[in-house]
Image (cartoon, rainbow, N blue to C red; front, side):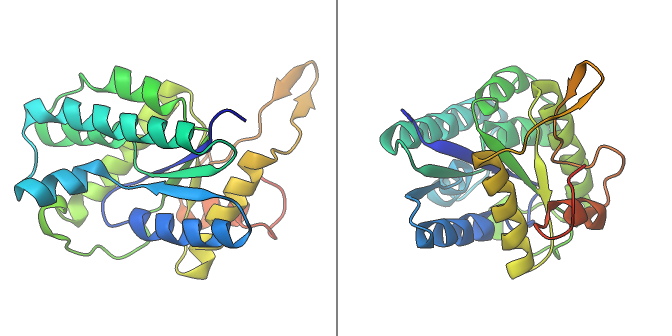
Length: 219
């Protein structure tokens, strides 16, 4: 393998992305898998300048997040890179905050280079976190925009939910399937791709049921 396997974590604010990224790194390293986490550059930007970005700064932040992910993937061939968000989240927030949809095309193309995407569910309580948190009312629309962007990009994703070890177990099960995907099923002459997320509803419990390793077949 000439580059690392890239696992992207996406999700609305206060849905546990950063905590999950750290837990995944520890769990995967314990298995003997070299793992590196690429933190969210937006957080670094806000901390350094003590403010949120302006509209004209969003594109540069998105590009830097992509650059760091790609650099880590090239630097750790044979390992796993956990990306604590990608440029796609910057594009989503550009639409949410500024009504600007111009970043989607590049962000979707950049995100499509990731090998698997984990979308954190909205089942954790919202917590304030300095400059980056707008409030619980933005989580549903942001989640909807993320899902729509992934659909446009043709990127499959797995929704991970639950608390503590349950959330981590669901995420690890998804990564295991990304490393060793199950065989596709066939319907007549047309192959049917295995779907990670529930296409019929957005209910976290339904999605979790199909993601935990001991709950039966995926959708």
